[in-house]
Length: 562
Image (cartoon, rainbow, N blue to C red; front, side):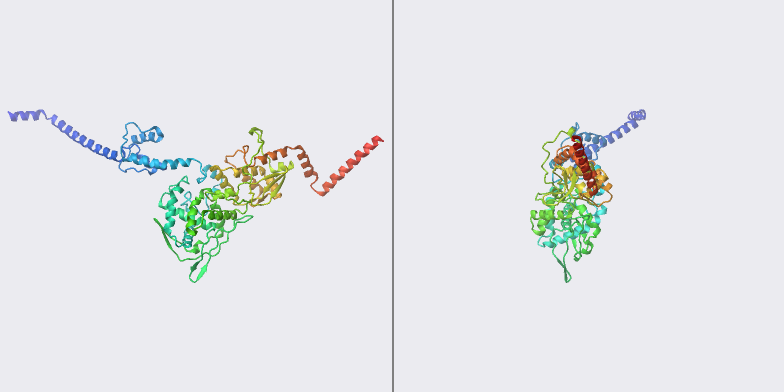
């Protein structure tokens, strides 16, 4: 019976046995799959709480530094949820908030928050990039031509040839004070690295070991190019040679002229710096060709090519045991030479980088003065060109140089003579003016240079205006035709945020000019002088005509009475 029952069951279950077996296999695989998914989920949870923020590692900005396990790749749904979190709408519902990764994020963001938020505020020590919309007007005026300082242009292929000078000057500085080893310089640079990091908008290179190397090499190079270090003579074989300063005097007329004599020729030396090692060139390769001198001055005074001054102070202090005030005085004197073409003042104010020092030396003597009887905007009239002012009786005379007044100190004397410090327009003028204006636009400083640029731009709005000012000795044109000067000033103030009708240091001068221009008496006198007194013969003719007219009137009067 048993056997027949068994046969009957198999026979009856011929169709059901495969179904039962298939169901069992599916169940086994389902349980196994669920177990694997659970293990992976628990593993990801332990690492990053099943993180909806796992893709932050690829996000730009400071969030790019957040760590993320490679084996926990977020799904599309997770990335969608994380977007709402980044946008500030809070964590998505149902997300676990425990785990070590959230703690790492909190600690990281709490450390970064004060530093990054501080960058939004306008600060004097900040070194900004020039906006692309502004730099596109004249790219050569804002970009370094020969050497880069700081992180913004570091690594530019066209500037790499100047790196040998940085190593050369590093060796010279190390030889100045052999009691201070290279390690000490690097420790000082590493100590200020975090402070330097807060001075730039883009600072990713500074926080690495390469950042300390960059600060040291760039700082040594700037001090060397400025020629303010008393570099000692070195012996090469049996001879002793001295190095001349690499930045010599600037031209008072056109060009920045540097005298470079034969450099030292020390034996080649290897200098190992942290993770980077580079063979140094001999001093022969450190000779600077004459065609680079203008480029050096250009690069030292670029807004995007600045290094915080406290870095130079650190290096100078270690090399010479000198004080920051001593270095500041030397830099001030060197800037005076670099910009010898322009009238500058002597200043004792502190500065954060070389371009700010340059800006302070252009500060007008009447910087804090303004018009006491300023009128509302809608009553102000457009400024007049030099030709129109001349026809109205305004004279133009060059102002003699003195150490208490700068290029910007324009003054109207006796209401009829506009005294203007002589403006030399040369190849470097565009770079100097544009970077000074860009510095003003990026900071809380007064727009002295912007006001001056607008003022001179209105005076020289046409080539005829330039011709007149050149004739009067107020302008010296070394860049070409008078139209080029006029075009230069017209382009200089493009995209500059400045309202000429607001209060500024030239407001009172503008008001006086407007009053003189609108004076009817001045116009008649000016017309008489310009049209009838241009030569002695015209003067004699006018006088003779006046005498004849007077005699005729007198004769007529006597004839009537008689």
